[in-house]
Length: 93
Image (cartoon, rainbow, N blue to C red; front, side, top):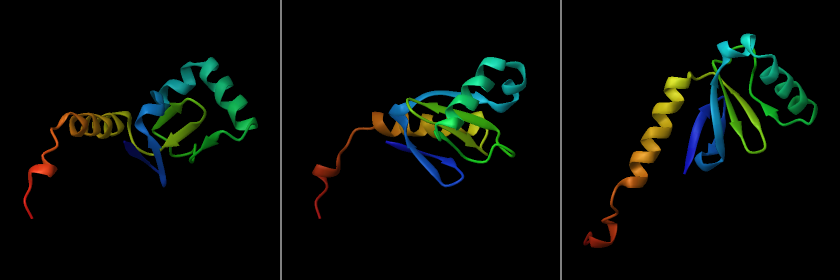
């Protein structure tokens, strides 16, 4: 499944490693160093200025204008959808 993370970016849910609140950036020099290193390799997307969260995937970092709570809800909806039974074969048309 895919999740829309804002700013025109859509990513596979299984690739998500972590969702981090941007307020934590100021308190973590390690995350800031990691972002700078990935920026040099052009593996960072999204506007950093208005970002509310950061999505870490296996090979990319995305800045998102959506909050961690919103992204969590979206990923939970996908999880719920995946758990639903599929009765489409039983429908008669």
